[in-house]
Image (cartoon, rainbow, N blue to C red; front, top):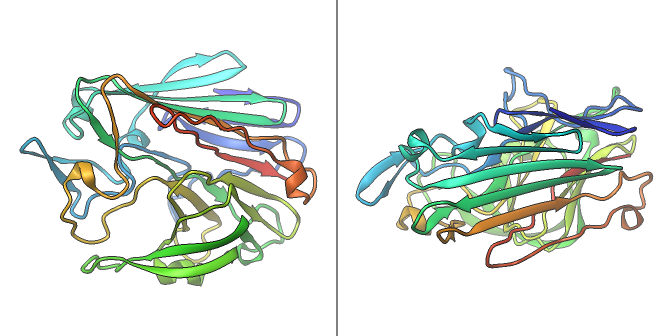
Length: 318
């Protein structure tokens, strides 16, 4: 499965319904992390119906105990391709006896991709096909090559919010024995630093007002990911010298210590009524031709609080 125009080629895999590659045909730059057993075999999974996991990997629902792997169900599933006509790629995943043994709800999950000129549109649809309310959360976990060009280093890159930010940084105990704390931080630019990520295990910020975060290097190549509407942003890499970074907008997060709330009321959980659909459409504007961010990128958004959720993904820029 792939989409191509005169500048870019995007390929996809049925595993998780993920983007496999995003390649600039002129420069040869590959923007997407390709996975490696020495660092992280993942690439850019969608996180549903969990972001992270519960503290011990189990939860109770209707008097029964269930368990899911880290980040839920979709990343481990093989999706069905329902459209691959050269203009659009759409993949879908439906609940089954296997999924209901882990998550006792009926759902239809769909992700669609369209490449037109220099715009990639990604659409997520999550439908509650059951007869009762469905608790869930959602997030993205895209990994990007960093550095992108020969002769560059990870530390040459920075991440910059579109506006100065006053944030809460979620700091958790790696041993998960005590509740997380929230620290006040003021920043706009974050340096790519193995030491800083290792210090906190994952950088997690809450309360962003910016529309997007831009990862850029010394040769003016990078990626931009929209974070508008997301309560959390996580920044992670596997370990020192790992040549990638994940920029992860989340609606919820893992349990970082024991919590009193039941599964449906964990922090970041949402509820989808029977028959309703969360409709997530991503619009990415043209590839950046220079460093004039305001001129180069705009974002169209659809928002219906009852049944729609607008998510903007990433795009390469140069």
